[in-house]
Amino acid sequence: MTSPDQSHAATAPPENIAPMAEPDRPAPVAPGIIEVFPVMPQHWPIVPGRLERPWMEAYPQRHAYRCLPLNMANTTGWEILCPVGLTAEWNGGPLSTDITIIPDDPDFPIEHLASGHFAWGIMTFHVSYLFRTAPGWRLWVMGPPNWPKDGIYPLQGLVETDWLPFPFTMNWHFTRAHHKVRFEQFEPIAFVTLMHDAAIEEAQPQLRYMVEEPALLRQYEGWRESRTNFNDRLNQRDEATIKAGWQRHYFVGERADDPSVKSVNHVNRRRLKPLARMEPATGKAGKSQGAKGAPSGKAGAIRPRGGGGGGKKRR
Image 1 (cartoon, rainbow, N blue to C red):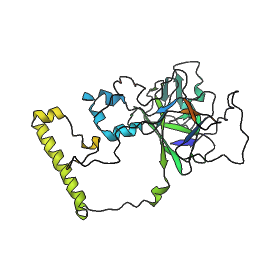
Image 2: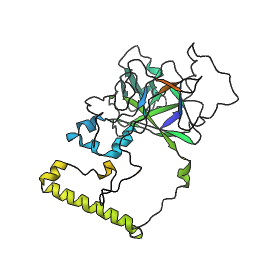
Image 3: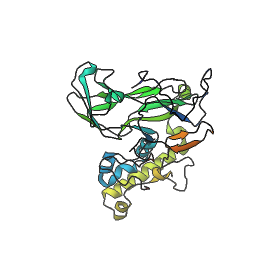
Image 4: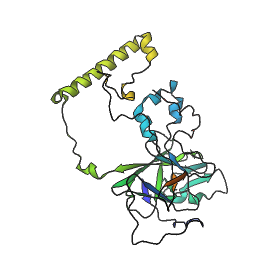
């Protein structure tokens, strides 16, 4: 769940940036651009989604990284990072004061970052930016994909950032009372990705049977036979099959029944651009921005606890 947040006035630009003449209405955002405006003097780091997940790193032989859909979901968006480590707890009550949030740094103004604003066991992060997107494009706001967290669940929202003139909040719902939840410094508190959602209302799901599409049926049966044979050989401890370890057809974008046929649209690695300062005079992107001490902004550059090796190319 995300909610519009009007609790913070937009901050003035730094002294070396002259304010622009106020037009009747803001100019629309160009396609392919996400405009990001700070609304608080302290704004939290934004970086491309990382590949690594602690549980994936801990998986035997890191086998979870062989699931390409997981990898793509992890990296198809941008993370908004927690600027300070904190511990949160809900006592089970209905009031906002029934949620306590204690930052590791006692001098950190935690009320600018998180609160029990919506009460009823919901912890609210105040996203320190106003986002704008091109007409028809919205932001899907959620917790980091495939990052389970014990005792709390990230709510999701689809935000109309193509017109919204104020920021939204990111909300997490406690699932257990009297359980301390940790957010480490630079752990994602929100994950945003683009969605062009107008066409979805025109989409018509259709029930069909594969006998009506003989070519598709042959491809499916070829995949099923290949998978069954591979698993049988694996169960029989076939040396070559054990050495191969797994079938890579989907990962490399080829058909199981005919590996020579490759998907022309296949992607097995996502590389999103980091947040960059746009120079008003030129309209060109300048240097990437980041808070002091924050990670570099490159996908995979941030290592979760126990992580490692996520930057290596996987086949």
